[in-house]
Image (cartoon, rainbow, N blue to C red):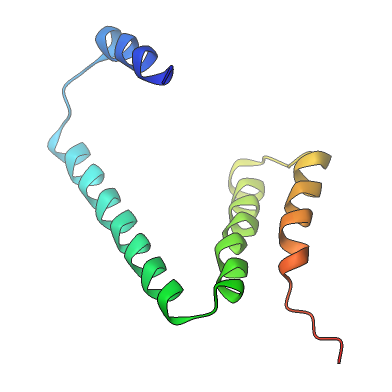
Length: 96
């Protein structure tokens, strides 16, 4: 609720016209996001929800790795602990 007025003030002060290339990037981003959500809905309809949770949250690991390798951002101890607490309970361990 607070971000809309702030964004409006920033847009009024720093706005510049959007180019055709930027519109293309916005459209491509929207299409990819729409495709991702469509695939997610189809996957959740066909498979066990518990198994798909691990796949959903595996993105957290990959985003962290991209941050470390691409942007030299090393997560702090609490962030690492949070990632472990999210991923570890969903690991497909079979103790039979």
